[in-house]
Every structure is written in C-alpha cells, then in structure tokens.
Image 1 (spheres, rainbow, N blue to C red):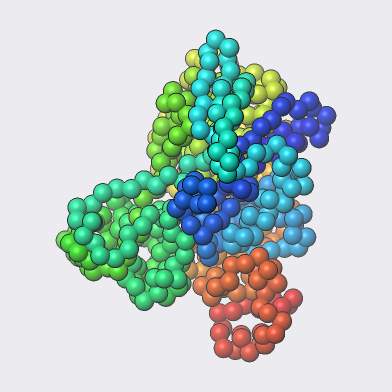
Image 2: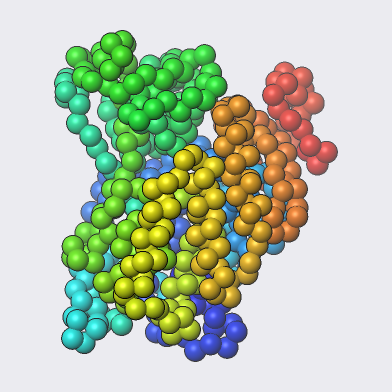
Amino acid sequence: MAQLRAFEAARAKGAEMPEIVCFEKQSDWGGQWNYTWHTGMDGTGETAHSSMYRHLWSNGPKECLEFSDYTFDEHFGRPISSFPPREVLFDYIAGRVEKSDVRKYIQFNTAVRWVTYDKSSEEFTLVSQDVNTGESKTYIFDKLVVSSGHFSTPNIPEFEGINTFPGEVLHAHDFRGAERFGGKKLLMIGSSYSAEDIGMQAHKMGAASITMSYRSGPMGYDWPSTTVERPLVTRFEGSTAHFADGTSDEFDAVIMCTGYLHKYPFLPSELAVKSANVLYPGNLYKGVVWQQNTNLFYLGAQDQYYTFNMFDAQAWFARDVMTGKITLPPADQRSVDIKSWLDAQDALADHDAEADFQTDYVRELIQATDYPEFDLDAVSTLFKDWMRHKSEDILGYRDKAHRSVITGTMAEVHHTRWINAMDDSLERYLNGPSQNVDTNAMATLDPNIILTKER
C-alpha cells in the first residue's frame, strides 16, 4: 500500500507513471491488519497471511506511526486517543489509499508462485495464480518490490516432552483471542511484544495466571500479581513445565511467542532475504535495495520501531530509484554503506539507542526524497516515553495521551481504560458507551471508566 501511494504521489505532481501490477493473495488489502478469524486453510486452500487477533490495540502511540501526508486529524476529523484498536488503524491506512485511487493496480485473490531473474535481459519472470479459479499467468517485469512482510511464518522451537503436553499448544500466529483462557494457567514462551501483549490480554480476559518464559532475559515490567517471569523451559512432563532455574509448574495451555522467519517461498535463494529479526538486515542497501541485484527492492524487511511512516520512507526511496531520480552508487560504495549501518547496529546498547538508530535511518531515506518531512527527533522521544510508561505501568500505558508531531493535536483521553475496554469495534471506540447506558451510573459502578465531556 505504501509503494502504490508513493507512485500515486509522484503522478499527482505530474510525473509519468510506470506500468504497475500489484499481487495480493487475500481478497482485500491491509496485510496484517486484514483480520480473519482463522489461520488454517481458507476456502481457496491458502493459509492466512495475517497474525492479527481480536482485541488487539496498538501497543505503541499512533503518533509514532502517523503518515505525514495523511494525518489522523484529516481522516477522523477530530482528536482520537493514542492507542487505537485494530479496526481503527485498518480504517486509517485504508482511508489513505482509497483517497489515492490505487486499488485499480491490485490483482486480489492472486498468489505469486514463483519468480526468476534473467541477468542477460535484466528481467523478472513472475508466475501468478488466481486462488479461486486456479488459473496461472506469466508476467515479465523490469523491477520487483517484495512487500509481503516477515511476520507470518512462525519460528517454532522444539522442547523435550512437549508432545506429551495434554493442553493446547499454539504459536502467536495462530492466536485469535484470549477469551478461552479465562480461569486457565497460561505459559508464554518468549519475551518480546507478542508475549507481553497476548499475556496481558489473557490477564484482561480473566486468565488465572500467566508465566513468561524467557531465553535472553526477563522483560522486567511491573506485572500484575498473577504474572511471573521464569527462565527458559527445559522440558515438559505431561502438563508440568520445568524451567532452567529448577522451578516447575503445571499449565493448561502454552503459547509460543518465539518470533517469525523471513520466508519468501516465491523467490529463489539468491534473491531472498535471510536474516534474524534485526533493525538492519544485511545485503540491503539503505535497508531497501538488494545489493546483488538493484532491480529488486524490499519494504519492511527489518525489525520495527517505526512502521507505517517508515514503510512510506522506504517506498518513496524505492520509487525514486526505480524511476531514475536517485542514482545508486557503485557496488563497492554500497557495501561500505551497508557495513557502516551493520557496525552501528552491533554497537547499540539499549532500546533507547535502537529507537535513535531507526530514527536516523528513516531520516536518511526521507532526506533523499520529497516525502513530507516531520520532526523525527520528537518521534524518537515519544518512543522512549512509551517504553518508560510500559515499564512503569504495563496495564495502564495505553491510557496515556500523546501529541501529534505533525499537527500538534493532543490526543483525547479514551472514554474507557484499556483494561476495561472489551469492545474493540470502530463504532464503540469512536462513539463511546451506548446512548442507552447511564454513563454516570457506569462511572459510579466502575471508577476505572473515564468519561469525557462529549460522552
């Protein structure tokens, strides 16, 4: 969606548009934000791409991901809170591309099955398939942009005895909601965003206890009393998990929050990114251009503090390289540039340094193009504030309000605290408690509900 918007922005300024074809396996756009209730085979026999789940609310301030050319104020026409649920963010990103009229470039329900590259002709041959009819087609392209992301193929470790575990075992990719874990003892294996967010959603939905099992170190948040952290699981015996510190406990369910793999089944190995989830994967010049083939581009291949607006910065840069507006340096100079970023990445000391690192990266891309600039240093400060707020209050940080660095608008305080917000629909988020509900009585019964003047 970012790449299509980048080309449309250039067309609006009078630039000649190249021929563009976008292939989307799903029936609608939105990628991860295009939620479906299942992750198994759908009616077409295709596995679901999205790892989205019910009751997901943004775990970072919307002010850190805001498009500089399409603000939340423009889309919603009023201030909204800083941590919207999934349906609200989907509405925002879809609204921008709907305004841009780029849907005509997309072939929906179309999977890319295989891509080859001919060095002599400098052309890509792409084979696609309509997932409904089974019809295959072959195309020839001069440039190829891989924008399928890398958060849909689960990384699944093995643990001794896990096949004897009698309860439910799943990966975060397969998680679609925590309601069924009410009253259950839940083991989360992992210590990053998925474990933190799914674990606290399970707490919100009434899980009896949550245990976070970490490999590299504890998250160290001020967890609720029902949540504890333990070092990595060493083995399972039936429903009992044994941990590296010699402790053990019984559990009803296990969720593997163990990350995702770079997986591009439509690409030959010489064109596919192979990397851990890091802020700067090797072999990508400016994190975008494939070093050995500068006709190949990747968007969103890195770990992310920035998201929507970083994808924009990458898309604008890729567009200008493809159209010749940006001339790439020779391969040896590109290698030096890549190494300098990799060396800087290796020296990062903490999360604050990581936020600054990616801020500098996004800044460099934006300065090379005509993407509308915004105060990146202010965004980096927001990231640091957000991380501190999480550390101080893991259940309450989403109730904070932040100021847009683009419009200056102060976010509204949401009408309901996150821990009590059980309806994540767009309508409930924007309109508040039902008009048939006595909101004063609600506030009396539940002091955690915050009422604004409008409601």
